[in-house]
Structure formats: structure tokens, C-alpha cells
Length: 295
Image (spheres, helix red, strand yellow):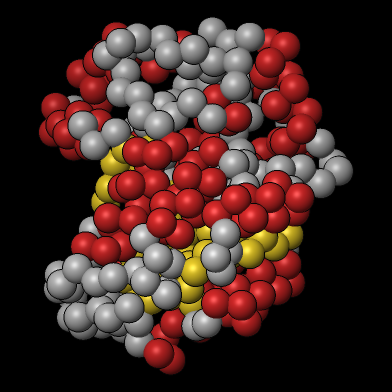
């Protein structure tokens, strides 16, 4: 993987053939689609997930050089071991996709500190740990690409997912800073902003309005691979929501909020199937090991 140096430089599109790519939360949802798409582009993929069986099953489905590795993104030793396994199997790390994420939905005052810490640990500390460890490997080689999966909630408020929104704003701030700090290092950064994407994370919810942009895990995977190939920083899935988010900054908060409410943003976390959502909450926020899924 060759990257042209210099702040703001656009490299020629390069081939991912043989590139070593690591994806966290890669066994399901967006992560699964991202891992599969990189593999189709010729990359050698390491899939990290707390659900080791699912990670290995996906690696078998993808075939080739893909490997599945157990990973807890909140644990430094686990993350280090994951990247070591990726490099041992597939060569020097070229791309890291920090995708693992969890979302507790409900009125903010009914949540618990335990749930909030889980979200902060997975959604924000995960990318912090992963980005630092990837940089330590990439900087000496002066090349590499780190993709942090944020969310449309990293740019606009999402009522009923307040802590999740806070963590995704943190991911945006982190990645903005890293891109500027390491602008001449040869390492590049991208931010993915998924909109409403039907995955396990959105279980029990329904699309509240046709006006609310909806995409698929494959839309996200396509955006991530293109971002790496073409050195794009901000990418959105579906792509159209990026226009609305940017316009929101121009018209002011009161108008933006009225538009968001008219699109049904406040209904995502309010109009849920409590049975389906309770299953997700138990699986993701229990004290025992859980599948971190994807943003």
C-alpha cells in the first residue's frame, strides 16, 4: 500500500491486494460487511470479535488468508495480541478499522453507570487503544490507514442514545485531532458516519420516517474501502446524509433540531419493541463476555 506524503495530498488509487487489514467487531453487522469487502478487494483480513466462534466462522466463509481472533477492545493486552496475530498471519498492518460499538437505548435518567461505562469503554476507549497501537506499528514504516467508525450521532444529537452519542462525538474529535497531529507521518485517517443501519444494534427499533436516511452494512463497507483506496477523511453511509448534516451546521441549532424531529430522530429510541431490545441489552451489557457487534 503506497501513500503520497503531505498534508491534504490525494494519493493515486492503490490496490488492496495482499494488504494486511484488521477489523474490530468484525463478526457481525457493519464489521462483517467491511471484512468481507476488504477480502474481495484482495486484502488479507483479520477479524477481531469477542465472539470467537463467529469470527472464525466468518474467516472460513471469506476463505483465503482471513483469520478470526478473539478480541476485547477495552483490554490493551487483548488488542495487542489481536494486532500481533494479524501481523503474524498477514504481514505488517496496513489498515485498522475500529468498528466495534454498542448502544444502550432508553431515557437517559433510567440508564445505569455500568451501562454508560460499557459504552465508553467499547465505543471510545476501543478506538483510542486501537489507534495508538496501530500508530506505533505504522509510524516507523511511514504508511498505514486507520478508519474509525463514528456515526451520524457523532455529528448530530440522537435522543434516547445520549451516552452513545457522546462517545461518537468523542470518536469524531479523536480522529480529527489525529489527522492533524500526524498530517506528515504517512499515516492516513478516515471517519465513517453510518446513518440508520439495520443491524443487531438497531434490534427492536423501526425506521420512524421515510425522510430519515437508511443504509445497509454493505453501504458502509463500500464507503470504508473507497475511503482507504482514495484517501477520503469524512465518509457517510448512506452518502446523502452528509449533505443534510453539513447544512445543519449552517442553518443554526433551532432549525436543525426542528428538522431532525420532523424526520423522527427522537422516535428511534422511543418506539422500540421492548422484548427484542431487552435481549440485545442483556447480551451486550451483561457482565459476562458479550459480542460487541458493530456501530
